[in-house]
Image (cartoon, rainbow, N blue to C red; front, side):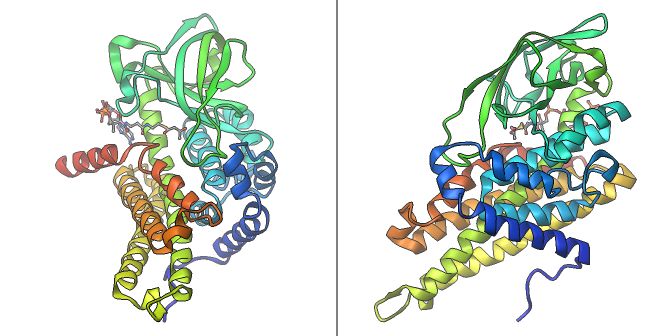
Length: 388
Ligand code: CAA
């Protein structure tokens, strides 16, 4: 039997993947259930992940990163997410929603100042697009950034910000010219200590409970004009470009969750006996396992393919929205399917907090919602296909 996946990994890829696996099993696995239960932010392990280079995998070494490629990033993220999706999303947001956008659109000074502390693990980054009344329809945001000499004054309310309560720096999107709609959106880099920025209530969530999520409230928050990321009016395109990268991260999170849920089900089906044989020997269970495994491997290939497309885009400048959206759509729906079946195969034990299976089930749901719902991924994919 072949050892899936059949994929050409370099020695560096394997070393990084093994380092992430080792860290996740030794340091995260023993605390994952406890932090899920308490909803506390896992500062200590997140800091260690930063010092190991997991928070800026594609960031060049000159800005404190590991200087590796997108495939390396998904390989490491997959290992973290197999053990805990909360650590996984914090890592994904730092790498893709935060660092990727500054790397692509930032000035030399912005890269040094805003990327280095995140890539080296000294600080945490976040991305803030959504508002209470605008989620999927991101271009209808109401928050305003008004130019005042060498400054911008930020006002408004942002919601569902991953790492919002704990982040040191934010990439924030606000309207600079509401009449121009999407073309009136601009992006800003905001230091979390700036007066006028406060964090709203922490969201009580179903899953990924150790990752903190909150509102951000901007009240006459004054930031230097040099903190604008890209040109005025370029913000919506920056937000969308960055989400293409982010969606590969969430697809990988879904893959990691699905893999662990599957592995637990496979083992349980081999051990648990009913009516005189292991339940995996019944076709009803065996066929479930076959479908779970097949969908997981299909997700993996789509994700690795999207990562390769992202790497190629670094030279060609070509968009990889189609690959990223298809990978996120398929992997997140696979995670939901696989975790659902895994709970079912475990029976009562799948419903108990004594096993991590119920946590995988709760964690999987968000992958179909954030960084673009499954409906938005279908919209992106169908628009690209219809424009051909
Ligand atoms: N890359 C580059 N440019 C892009 C792009 C992309 N991926 N997608 C769109 N654009 C450009 C378009 O080319 C267009 O430019 P032109 O006008 O110059 O042609 C412009 O942006 C507007 O595009 P659309 O007309 O397609 O815009 P739309 O209003 O119809 O919206 C959408 C498109 C796909 C629905 C988009 O709004 C979207 O992705 N919505 C979902 C938002 C989302 O994912 N939110 C999650 C936020 S993050 C989060 O979850 C929290 C967290 O912390 C993790």
